[in-house]
Image (cartoon, rainbow, N blue to C red):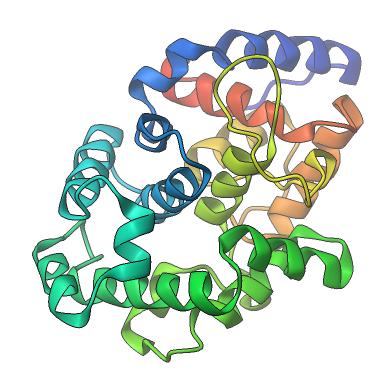
Length: 258
């Protein structure tokens, strides 16, 4: 089933839905509430990254487990990442979210420690990668290479490899959280080195299905080419902030069963 609209009408429809869901009440049921409990930049970006990493499955389970992970880190994620010893990190063995287990959690901690001690932090890595081609794809590809400097073969499945065609849904969502800045109080807008207009849609089954019903995505697979296709169309509606429509597509699917 699809809905054929003139582009102007479709823009008006999606603007209305984006405005409806890009509001503080959205936080109440969304995993972004986990990094919202912090005030320091490094705590926010680390908590957001770890929360985005496990953002698949039911949202209540994602939120519950992300909070559990913050608890294991004594609600001081930046301090824990920087200063935890191998002995301290053993507590992370307890963590599990679906196929993401304690082994993965410990690797994430070690890799983030490497990033903050040797690469000047998450923001620096993503922004350095972006500068290579002035594209989010190069940011995600560079981040992948840095994140796995320490090997961690088992854990590779938990970070999208866009060079192999992955949609990078959770990483694109993370960048939306960190980069977008508006007056609506949902996204953080802490990072200035990646322009909002260059962000890519966090594409998953739900946003993909809604986009196809609306006729703004033709590609059947939810891969990087589909991300490029649908984002290019969203740019026609708002070239400065195309990913605000993530709220519209997600809201239509999650809250309105569109």
